[in-house]
Amino acid sequence: MKLSVLALALFSSIATHAMADDLEKINQKKEIVIGVRDSSPPFGYFDKAKGSVSGYDVEFAMYVANKLGAKPIFKTVDPADRIAALKEGRVDVLFATFGKNREREKEVDFSVGYFVGTQKMVAKKGRFQDLTQLDKLTVCVPKGTTNAKYLQDVSTTVQVKLFEDYAEVFTALKEGKCEYASGPEATMLGNLAKMSLPARNDFEVSDVPIASDVYGAGIRKGQKALQQAINNALADAEKTGEAARIFEHWFGGTSAVQLNRNFKISL
Image 1 (spheres, rainbow, N blue to C red):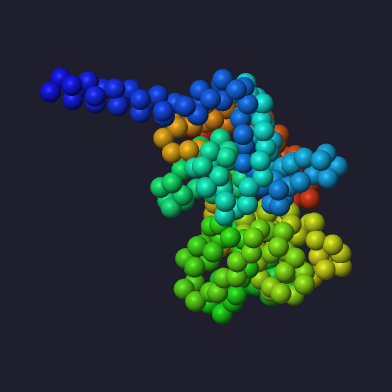
Image 2 (image 1 turned 120 degrees about the vertical axis):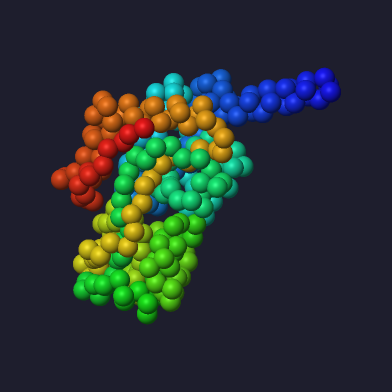
């Protein structure tokens, strides 16, 4: 009986230590590997001028890394590979347009939200004006995103065509292989802004909202210490005004994608 109690205590101690491994590892290495997007402007994209990734997500990731006292090491991840990259240990955390939902929360943990947005549709001007149109449409979306689920929540007969990422979706739109595409409003506007003229002038992001989304940092399941540290850093960004500054930089009046900030980061 005593042996069993000792064994259980030892197992509990090992499990508790294992749960703290991610933050301890980051503290020991003084670096954190962060999964980001490279084709989802303005959240994450490859900036040719800088020769590195830039964007709203990237700035928040850098702020969090600085608060943790760690050097940020960025690794690009495709939408469909985000959870696998995190669970397999290829990245320590995700700042990659990673929307919270129940299905994902079964596999990974999330920080508090640092962006709230709306999913919308891109189509030729005047083409998409009502959600009931979805019943007869084929819509292009990237693999591994929540976009298809949101569309199917609205319409049981909508058809979904999958692509590797937003870059491929918008190439298909431009080439006429796709008539409709759906995703976060900011991402749709960001990719549309990058489309070359005169094709860009043919398309618009519809005013019709499909769903709302909250982006959080993705963290391995059970890593409570790291989750709390990231939450504290994000809350500090709100308190100091850095969160509002980052938003203004990427979505303010002089940016390519202009949105109003109607949320605050809170624990």
